[in-house]
Image (cartoon, each protein chain N blue to C red):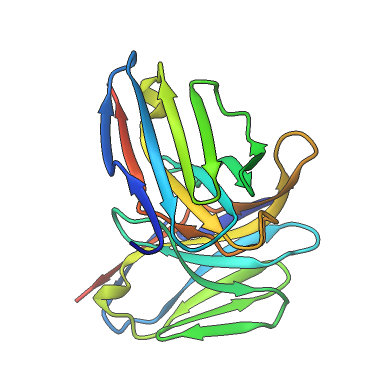
Length: 115
Length: 115
């Protein structure tokens, strides 16, 4: 069964302590893997899309990588303002009627960066 | 106004009330979505509209009734809700229709509490 799983569920880091978040997926024919950031009281905000194994993308202290089975979001020297819930999502076939690809989200990793 | 705007931001209603959530996008996108976000659960896709036509209804109970009068506006009409319907309701839009692989721009959400 196609699915998206994120780990850990929550992560507490000291400011400057680098770490990685994981998103594993089981889907044949990946049509892209998306990372979003969600701050409390706000909707998710797009960060990156990765399409093929070996691809990497960077934005400030964040770097996303992709293999054939999982994606990592590496956070280098995080700051308190990086605290948020990070969501990954992949298009999965589903829906009613004839069906279509739908962007399907994992449960997210809640990151807290302590000063 | 820019981006995706949702109103109201907070709504408390009784199980017998009728209310509506409103979403407006100022991005010129042609697909609009309703997602439900509950605690400890991944975002759940409810409805998709592509060029004002509903293309997905993910087995959502009939007490939720969507309306899309044009490509910029989306409503979610609520009636006879249950306490388990309490959640954050997120509206999103994308360019290029709904392929499941387009970047979504989310609104800030409407926090619904059903008493």
